[in-house]
Length: 297
Image 1: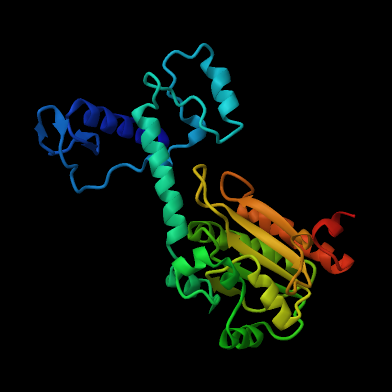
Image 2: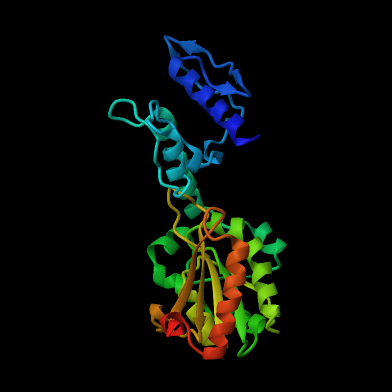
């Protein structure tokens, strides 16, 4: 379904619910009964996904003086401009979209990357010291360390003193990993192959913080580690991923030693573009034997 038809369907749905006519499904009112002008339970059928409408084309002002210029301004930012209001409040459509985006952000944090995704991409599964999601969110320090058995598996998988390691950590957004990794890693590997750099099997780390790369670097003595990790989601997107790249990461390495490619998602830096850029940065780090702010010197 294209965005224009989706928008019309959602608008009809909202109008029907406000007027007491029940929800609209497939452009038809649902069979929900109405009592005293209030819509009752919505049909069990799936409703349109309001988050599929691009915020940059979302325009709900009733009497804009220059709609074309307003839309041009909106095309430059994902900020919620032109959402309209009803008195001092948001319009129903705007409020529904905020709540939907907030729900997507919560889902990204509290859900896990699926086992099927890990197996499909032939990742080697390891887990930090966190025993569950609650401990991961409340004990960041445990998300930076591995148990003895996990470290042995990491050493076996990566070998000793590899030139480059690519690792994937779920971080604070499982959605970001599943949305971007499959496009970024092939581009990254292709870029590295141009420099005759091959990488060992890729680790997937459950309950990962960025500092987990330091524990891996300490155990393997890797020259460069590139960690792809899901970032804390917001209301603009729940699918933002970052690539943290560090030369000789070890315990206690300062954050200034890490080079970061951020905002990797379909509305920011695309995964393919990020993969190519990461390969160039890795080659530069290997040549200069530095990373982070020292790489800019």
